[in-house]
Length: 385
Image 1 (tube, rainbow, N blue to C red):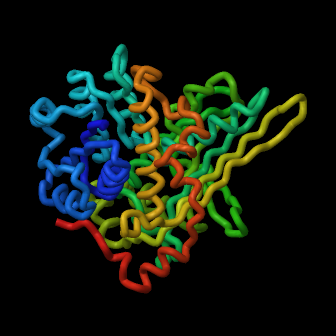
Image 2 (tube, rainbow, N blue to C red):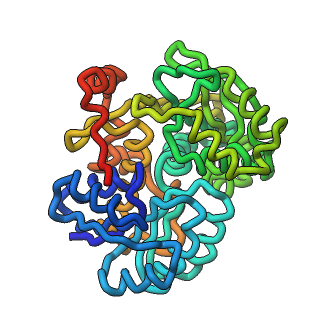
């Protein structure tokens, strides 16, 4: 029985704790600064191997005391990105494995410094993007003798947009603001490149529907560092419905809300609805030479909400939770195979998709499931304190 501490009982922590516990091979301690929230999630799953705790992980001393009193093998942080560096430091001090979901570049650099020389695993950037998208891209890139151009595109969108921005808060508002406002990184003409967010606007068509894509921060993970000097162009962009980027440019740049992120968060959470009827789009395009011929290969996937343990979970919850759970599972099954900083692209796509948690990426749900559960009122089931 693997023992893990999941920090954060929000959208992702509530699902990943249940997935791990339901496997029967994990004892899960779920901790949140709001003890009632953790208790509500644990009670909702109705599993004896999830235990709720009240812990303020922003206080390293309190976190360390909790971990000394409740021994675990690994810490999984589903906290906001800015909470992660001290959590990683506590994990290093106590010689525990560490996993997080951060897309923030500076936070990842801090975790990387903490991981230097560690005898345990430090795997930041788990989840969807960064995370699964890097695993998929690295696999496709490995099929080529020489890699020319690589495009990583991911979208987490409402199935039925009903506002001018054609968007819903399917993800953390802090994370959205971060990826829209921070510098982006990639490779251009064979050299590392710094790119502006909300620029590089392009259109892309998948399954007959038109989307736009533009630069956002963090989704590329460490892939540019891994492939530096071995690829001509490598970019990551977020997909949205046409027109969204223009609205966000006005908000972030013209109205200078990127300089007032606390106010922007209030505006977004007040005005932009949330939904469980979402869809996640994953697109990788790689071109290069294979056996002397110029070729292109793609990985394309569309993931809809799924019913797990009697409750409807959004596509972004499923893909993010499945991504981190698969990586945790692969590491804890063979801990001797990994040590120190572990990049997402070190995991093989086939291993992830074959994993009991990663198989969520292969399930062929459609929009009909979430539509049916919304019609019957079952989609409103939530774990609330």
